[in-house]
Length: 348
Image (cartoon, rainbow, N blue to C red; front, side):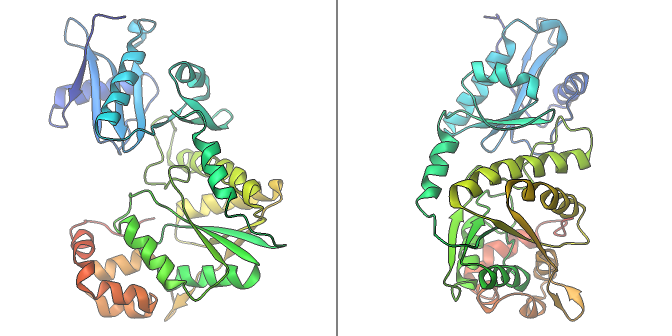
């Protein structure tokens, strides 16, 4: 055990943050933009020799300088971060690591969920976490020849989302609707869930699921050891698909519906990988052209922009009546304030 102690690093500490940036880069890691807590270990000369961070329920950006590897410093960083998570009542903890580091984290009590060879391993601190999740899903399995799935963030739920769900519902016996439960969007999960369920209440062959921590959004997928943005998107897509294939096998899903989004780099790469990989597992990838209104594609980004601009009347043709009713009610006040306070609400 080393004689060093772990210290919290404040965002205002420019010297420490510059040192952390340098240490991470030296170890081939780009500092992630999504971090809500950072710690470090200093040597006797007050130089940072190890660091780690958290974001939500994930550990990330962990590194030890070359000169101090083998001294047990990473164990101390991980122990400190896990305790920090426990102190804020987060007991189910995840991490992403390079394939060659997975065994090390396994020795520290983390268990592999899925692995993308030569890219990334997704791990958690519960031995049966993912299998327990699949067991719960299995209770909702339906019999039928055509069983579909779609994943909705719906930030917020639009007529475009509704069109996608209605098409899947019309073409299949049952549709499993996975609602991204991670709160990384301007519209909180509880509101997004409510609007999805209210907006699709007329469809009787839907089975709704919270995604839990296993299907994550691109907003919180770690980018810190990916060489560029395209590599990040590709890794995220491959990881998401590996998780989804396990879910599909559990529920007998044989098609996944996704919306086309020609203006989005992220969705373009994502859909391309899905179209290539899903058929390898006996799952059809159905890419649905986007619904239009007055010659323009309906997008949640445009809805958020109209809300930000104070033009609620503009969203009337873009969202179901249930979504419009919510945003014109007092209940939406906090969500509207949040959207209006955000600099850029258009996501690509």
